[in-house]
Amino acid sequence: MQKSAQDVLKDIKQQKLAPVYLIHGDEPFFIDQVVDAFENKVLSPDQQSFNQFVMYGKDQSLGEVISYARRFPMMSDKQVIIVKEAVFLEAMAKGKTDAKDKGNSDWKAWVDYCERPTESTILVFTLKTLLTDKSKILAPLDKKGVVVASKKISEDRLGVWLKDYLSSHSLHIQANAQELMVSFVGTDLKRMAHEADKLIVNVPQGKEIGLDEVEKYIGISREYNYFEFQKAIIQRNSEKGQKIAFYFADNTKQNPAAPMLIMLFNFFAKVLQVHDLGAISEGEMASAIGVNPYFVKDYTLAKRNYPLGKVVRIIEAIKNADLRIKGVIGNSDKEREIILDLSFEIFNL
Image (cartoon, rainbow, N blue to C red; front, top):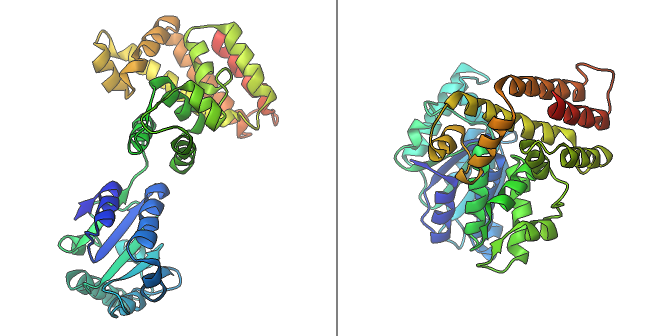
């Protein structure tokens, strides 16, 4: 059975538990979130001493894990076994085992346990690799197990995730504050959750989060940040844009060039899309380029201010700046020079 991480967290809260779980994916935040819930919210602290085990796939074989799972709990009706980085399952999925006979025996043991699990055991496997839906190790879990795919969130969905995360704690966030956090933090969900938790702790439930709260509790300058830099570029306000660029150039530790380049590349890639879309409604445009409808006006303004040819040249300039940071071109240019050069090019190409 396929379930989302949020579904499993709800099940744990309600103690509606399956005997076997496989949590896999390339987004560690959801994997760690679910594992933490299994570790701390299934058994009481006094039950955990004798009935909770955390293992690591590199140190255990599948046979050893199943041997533990077949045991019965002590002074409890459940035991929890968590196997982190179950590399033997990944090897089995890829057909890579130490010996053919061992591979066959592991496969038989896997199928047998998934079909006839010990009902008093909650057995959790994690893999920080995203398996395909057709991976053979998933099929045996169809009837009695649960599979959770922890996938990376695309950048255009990050704002929605942040909004939902805060909403689950009875907080609402204004669109401009949401965009500021996304541009500042980027796609690192663990860091985003950490920053959002600062708001959850400090802002009263039911209150709307605006720029004031983001600046106060997260420490993002309202005046000098990637979001304001992008706004200056959209408006072709070179005075404001260069002022912010000089601030970034003089404070590269707090405002490194790499996240700025990612933000600018993604923005102008969307402006390029807008040029290709032609005359469509704002709702259709928001859906087509994957942004909050609140920000559609920014892209239509950027389209007017930056003709197609200029957008292409700016994207090329951003790519060259990225190559300079990585040392592929240039002579070990400092980030300060790269930031200032790129800002000048954007406003003057």
